Image (cartoon, rainbow, N blue to C red; front, side, top):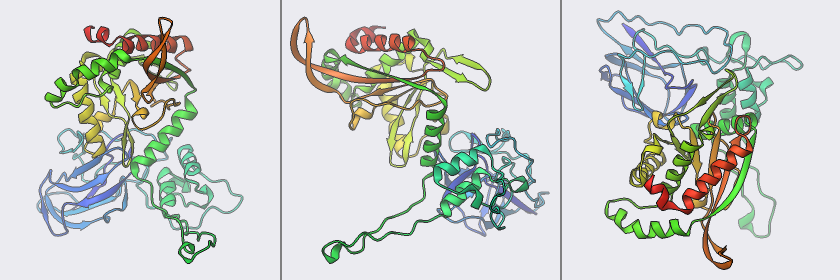
Length: 436
């Protein structure tokens, strides 16, 4: 019998992924649970297992090709199994492009990243969008109203795609998000020759166009969503941290002997976690559609990590329960695995507050963008050696710039200021926060 395995939704309404590697070849025998492909999603690189046993009769897709959720990935010959080849079900008219993914059968094999794929049907279920092939008919006639989902229209604006020139794959020709993404990938920009300059060596310079990575697309969409949905209010402050600098210097060798390169971030995370425990208004999630706000008891700190593919925010669970050493080890581990794309999906979810340390590279102040649905984010600037006034005298000091952005829909200026004052006190007197 023939069995078709469709590219599954790996979580959070995924619509596409990039094929990085095939682990099998046509004609090979595979067993249930064997890994068949490595794909890059908008957050992680994941290995996909096959939920059936059989011989591979056909592989769909080439390396570096973008695959759509719900499209055939692998065809198997499954002798002795009643698994007839079935076409993908026709999608119903979608109300939005953010419908929840189908429930997974817990008996199925797991994808790396603690995601399970369904095995209860002969054809892998998938979200509505992406099941129909993109038609090759002409684009929408001039003057006609284009049917397109709001998400697709927003993506088209971000990518500079003309919605009217895109053939829709949804019901009644509706333009979907996957159609816009495909149109954005297919559009190319011809290299433009540079103006003539003196010397023949300047005669032929041009430009280079390359597709956006899955992660970069997600970062762009999230930033646009946050900036234009949550009214940001940003407060800037400076805290004198000579005592913190001295404490780190005194403890650095001891921690180094334990295999930990002690930075300032564990101290900052500890101070933020304690301040959030005392000012829980900044540790909440706002849901305007439901008309609710959720106050979090635990502090799950997101830490923005600069990776070659784009920004990732792994989460330190229960940061308020961890000491400096435990925080240092968690930070180093999560940052390294984020940069090498070994992070798990569950380690990127559930944050309640985010810290971005742009000062580690360059920058004194910034206006960080909130990592929605969180309600606040702290930007940490470059540690400065500068004159300060202490007891009426000008003396050398170490000043740490802070930028706190909050969602003004739920957090008022007074709440933000009180949290910031608490945080500054903990950083200025680090021994006090270590004793808590």
